Length: 344
Image 1 (cartoon, rainbow, N blue to C red):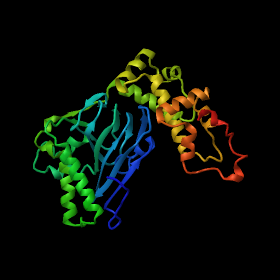
Image 2: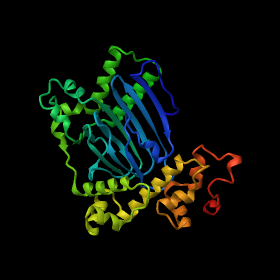
Image 3: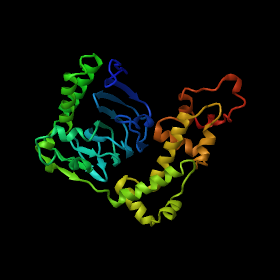
Image 4: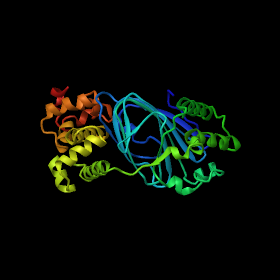
């Protein structure tokens, strides 16, 4: 992967690659999904992702550089299959350890909860759930649609991660060069991609464990939903305990198990991520760093700027300047106070 490219000959046969230059750019890891991403590691986020489509399945291959937490629903009507290709630290799904080669199945409407404690490489597949029973037509257990209607975590000791990555890269090149026709060739490649992700299920159906949502994930999920409902303001830990009716000790234990950090640190990272998103979307003629930071509960602006820079690798005003919507000279005086040089 490298430069961005795409093919337009057939809407169901295309591929494009893009650089990831901010945490927000990872919100769509597969298909047309939109998940919640919180940056947990310090520094400038970067990476790359390749999105492709072959007939009615979408696939992706990507990597990123910093620890993140990813939550949400991939799709309300499609099944998503993900595999970890490599991670320089631990990765967990629903608080369970995920090692390279593991395959995770997310049925339609299923909550996704993933923690990456370091840089990682991943691959993903999105398809209609009805595709899988046909793929395994001769296999009694896995040809049952009910088998794929449950959240599953497969451990394949012999899964060849490099072969999956090589196949997706090869297919991307074929699509880019227009070498895949919409007919039988596309059908073959579609089956090849499906089989590369989940073919081993036919040999080891018992390798897949059903995954229930642990209580710690439920508590953290409730906290995140409450934060989402109140995303326009700062929320204190004591307010969370009051509103979701949980003891502070239980809250701390849940965050330690699910996120690997305390609730105060996570709430700060969440609020900083909210500021980052707002700055990326802001019109510099109407909004400034001071207003956005204050709205989200950062009153000590000097300390806020240092925390922001420690997490994202740049000062907040640098993010604001990078969003491509600079002030016009004739509006310089009427815009928000530009007294943020002391934060540079």
